Every structure is written in structure tokens, then in C-alpha cells.
Image 1: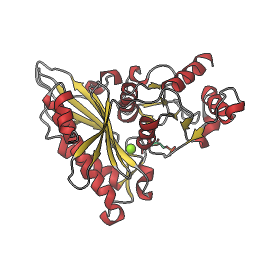
Image 2: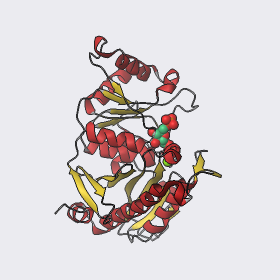
Image 3: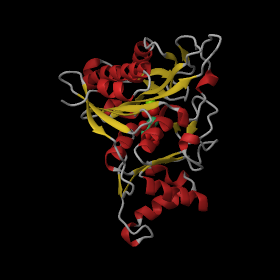
Image 4: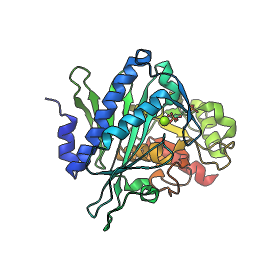
Length: 330
Ligand code: AHM
Ligand code: MG
């Protein structure tokens, strides 16, 4: 009998209320998956008039997925508050207590530009410990500003040819596949490990002229192939859904880069630290890979803002270490 997600959570979660919260997120993602699968038939395609806090036009499905997660996860008794890429402010659920609890952060539908074109998209989530409060009070924004290293769990669900969950509770990485016939999540990978070496990179190369010299030099030498300084031929993949690009790396190795771009006034990068970079970095580190922001490990990056952006370079450890050396020597 294959292990179910519920069995795995019962064995791994240090606290049943954490298991309950994760099960709730994953259950909702199965419902989002069903909507994604209906596509145009579900009348959920297209853009809205609204923009999110990052100034990006919201797709209908971004907002629907966000609302589904807010509604269902709010029922989880240990969840104190939520924050989402799609909402300006935090969403308090219940007062912080002396016992603590959890904060949930998510990108409800990553890869929005792929929604309408039937390419893999997904949900990314991160769970932080809620501060303990001797006098009960609602969670505030400052409670969320914790380094990625503080996460107690992180995961993503890819809505692709299969619906797949990849999850860590800080003790290795497990993978599960949604059985479309029974609705069960069955374990299809345990101790997922990213190969240390790789010959495959993922980057939006149309931005090359805007990158820092270290990143530009890195890609240029990869392109030189086996006669160049790297001595090997590289392959390139870019799905434009981080969740799908990272999933490929979790399954067969590779390196994913979304570096800062000189057109950005603050040179911060495109991807969001709290909803994308931190959860993916926890998963990658737990699978033996590395995640670097151009200065240090992403999980140790200072957090000043809920919607902070960051440069991301993650995946196969030897390749990320090579990028670290290039940045140090630049
Ligand atoms: P989103 O969260 O609004 O979908 O944006 C994040 C996405 C990532 O999934 C992906 O890696 C990147 O944006 C793609 O960017 P680009 O359009 O520059 O290729
Ligand atoms: Mg998104």
C-alpha cells in the first residue's frame, strides 16, 4: 500500500496542528487543480481590472485561488494569520496566544503568465512559527518578518500533466501525486535529492544585457560549451513558472536563476522573498542543493518587507557554489 500524505504527516509533523494546517493547504490546492484542469470551461480565464501590491495585473484565477486558500486555511485551529503575494496586507485569523501557532504565506498561483496557455503553474507555500504572546493580540506585519531559516515547513504543488506536491518539514523532502480517481495524495518520492553536478540551467536570457557581470559571465561561459572554460556542453530550459522550473531541478538537477536586473532602481530582482524564494530555498537545501542571492544563502537574507524581492540562484550545489565564487571574485 503506498503511503498517503496523511500517514506521512502523522509520522513527520512535530505537532498535529501543523499537520492539520499542511493538509488544509494541500486539500485546497487539489480544488485549485480541479479549476485549472477545467480551463476555459470553468470561466476562470483572463485578467481583472485590478493590480496586486507589486503593480502586476491580476488574473481571475490568481484571485480565486487566493480566496480559496484564505477561506479554507482560516479554519485550521493553529493558524494565526496569513500573507499572500496577491494581498497588500496581512490577513489575521485569530489572536496570538502563549502557546504559539503558525503563520502561512503563499503565492496562490505562481506562473500567472502561463494560466491561459495551458502550461504548468502551481501554488507555493511557507509556514513560519507565530510569536508567542502572553497577552492575546492579533498578529501584525512585524510578526512575519522572519528569515527563511525560521520556516517550519515549505512546499509547492505543480498543476501540470500530474498534480504533484513537494514538501519539507525540515527533515528531507517528500513528493506526493494526487490520484485523480480517488482524490488521495500518494507518496511518490522520499528523501528527494538534487544531483550535485549539472549541465542544465534555467534563466530568462532575454534580460542578459541587464544583469550583473558575474551572471552575464556565467551564462556566456556556459554557452561556450565543452571547448570553453567550463569544459562541458550546457542545455537550457525556461518554463516561466518558477514552480515548474524548480520541480524539474528537484527531479533531475539543474540551476535556476532570476538575478537582479539593472533596470530595477533597487536592484532587488523579480521574485518575492517570502512567497517564492524562501520556501523554494528551504526545499532545495533540504534536498542537498543550495540557494544564493548574490551575497549569501537566501535563507539567511534579512527581511524588511513582506513583499520584498530578491535575486535567486538555486539548485545543484556545485553549480551554485560556482556562481558564489564568480560573485566573490567580481
Ligand atoms: P508570478 O508569481 O506573478 O507568476 O511571477 C513569477 C514568475 C515565476 O514563476 C517565473 O520564474 C517568472 O515569473 C517568469 O518571469 P519572466 O516572465 O520574466 O520569464
Ligand atoms: Mg504568482
